[in-house]
Amino acid sequence: MKQLVRFFSLGLLTAGIIMLGVVLISDNKKENNLSAEELIPVIEEEGYHVVSNDEYIAMTVNPNENKPEQNSDEADKNSDKEKSEKKDESKDKEKEVNETDDEQAKKDEKEDKKEDENKSYVLNVESGMPTSSISNILEENGIIDKASDFTKYLEKHDYSLKVKAKETKVTSDMSYYELAQALMNY
Image (cartoon, rainbow, N blue to C red):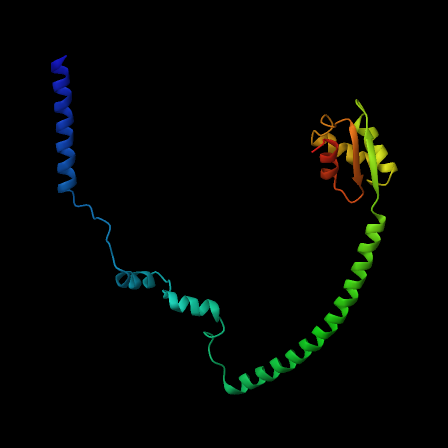
């Protein structure tokens, strides 16, 4: 047994010496640790552009600064166009403000109607009551639009087996999820 251990350790030692010799003798190039100044020409040769942090920030903050200069005639024409466009925009904004005030008033009226239209109902769920019966009661009292859709929703999401026997207050503005949660006593 001692001889076996000696030969095994001798084999490991020999393998280690051979690997060390290969690493020291081999002519593999190590990664060059180039500085930023040395990397810039290499990167530009590949077709990329190198920008400093300050230049990058300036480009992102003021993207129009780096555009080529236009001749003075074109610049004058463009400034006149911009002035007329700004006048038009200010007129449009005034119209929009008036329209948005009217639209807001209409939305407020619709919300008031919705609040009046919201119906509430106290649903008395009895033990063993099928979800189709619950859905029909909710449809009859204007809480949901279609009983079959709500029944399918309860079955699809496995709520039909979790309905608790109790009295539950429900409203017509509740979503199917909120109704299901109310029926499950959450």
